[in-house]
Image (cartoon, rainbow, N blue to C red):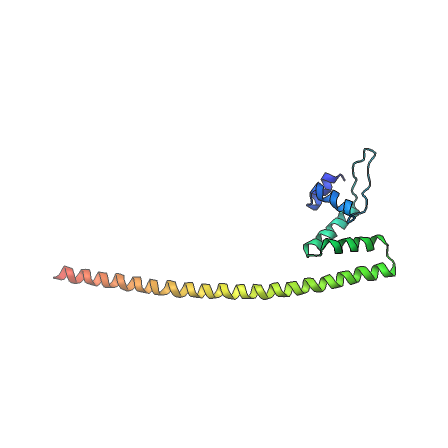
Length: 146
């Protein structure tokens, strides 16, 4: 597929795809006779994985390290190093998720508190308004009788 098609499929810009190739996140992309890039499904799968890494906050330098290790092939050292990098990053993501979950719980409790406060504010106004209406009606009846 062309770079425009790859950009559309991955959600990245053409500029970003070229940048990723230039810095080494992507292996050199095959080219047609007219020098236009020709992305393969394997390239798209790799880009999708990079997007997952980026989406979880892995720094570009670590993505570059992972890409370098990947290019070394499935040697014992490369596989162990890639696994270690992902294990470490997974722990970081889990810590972030736990912090976010704690923050979310606090926000939800605060929202419940405000809902209770709103209900308490609305109820007395409704009662007060009813009492005022009742009093005004009684006063009108008294005035009419006199």
